[in-house]
Image 1 (spheres, one colour):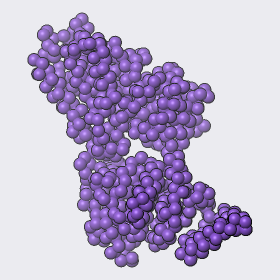
Image 2: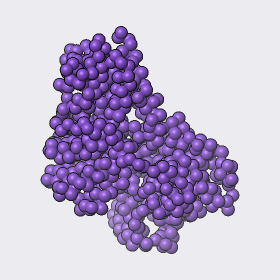
Image 3: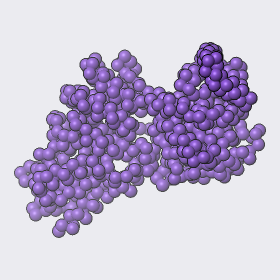
Image 4: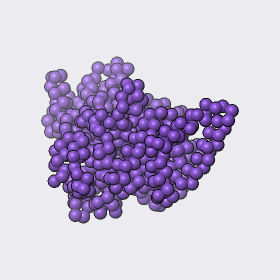
Length: 635
């Protein structure tokens, strides 16, 4: 295999030109084979193979820098920098990340995971380069989807002031670009970057500018005429009008063409956008036909492209999608908002059923939140479906535009808690902490799929900002018989071992209360069963339901009647439910022991969710052991 000859960065330059297409094919076959087993972002990587090869042929890594926006298209980059052997561990605990990681390779110059960050980061690298007197080339690679985010335009606006080279590659696999390109555009591109043209342009321009009386009016007239001509023949005038040079479009699967335009781009003294057209999923028919399915693929059968395992039970996202559909049927004021994730958040059916009340705002979470606030102020009932880690980007808007005005916006927070293989940038482990500090916010989390339905319906009656968090994966279907009506800030006693309640009081045995929030309920039930098997314990089970407002009365009652309180949540401890309960116990001047089961105040790497829970000691076995250890210490 040609790929086997690439042991480290820049080895691709040793591959003969006529073997490069075969190398591209080998890379695609390698990616399909590996990702069919591990899962991962297949479509974007298949589309960026030749583009990545061209970048590596033109640049000298790690001296030169490539910032990959989001980073889910960086697999070929990893292969070309000598990480082929590590691909067996892709997205596995302790193994290779699915995103660029500085700690993984010096060729990964910036950690990414969320979109629209690359142009800003790349511009910072350029300024650092210039301040330190260095000469390396800096390239930001951004997709057309990421250009729907406002941060990209903020960075472009800033980059227009740069007077040294900065290359921004627009990897376009979906944009509709008018066909006024071809020979004239290619000709202009080559002329505008030719050394004689650049030298002549600078010489004439600066001489004219120096002559205030006659030269400056002529220079302005030439500039207006040039811009008028460019409007007719150059499709990138959006960038040109911002002060950024535009080159392209170019076929992103033609290595020679991409190399040529990149070499031309390196000559530009300033920011330059290189527009590259690619085809998502190229080379693998199922991914070409179903790009959304293969964006973040689960393990699949290579021949058919179908998932290796079929899902038999509904997941939390499915439940949300079903319920919001019914809410849309019953109330014409209910509308749904997503930031470019209609499939991932379960809104596809709502979109098809109620297109006039469905809004995909692109990868722009800040805008999504304020847009929802405007809808609410106008009398609608907006539900913002968003992943927990992506809502972080709209934090300011949640405070000032929603909660300050106490507008009834509902945040359906998917992927709350550990999400697994996508790692640090995607784990939804901070939302309780950052939302609970905001006045006027109500935070709920369901114990099972029926309670998610109840909470969505109940939230529409509150006329307040509401956040409902639920995890990734199969929805818990236990405890169906426990469905007490929701009351604001009131917990649900599922099992109560206090004397005179359900007759489970064991004479002389210690009393333990498990206070579970949301996704930890299934674990709490299993831990309770194991504790009861001890024969001498009395164990209560409380479904907190609300992190804000917290049921302080239930907490005090539990503390006064139990020897040990155990709080369970899938959030970091700092700012989480457990910390709030500890504060409540202290304020009530109670001496009840409290064991807080939460995630450490740290970032959590990629890996299987069950394995991560075990490593972080929030799994059933670890919790049971920690409770037993604490009880034994008090004997």
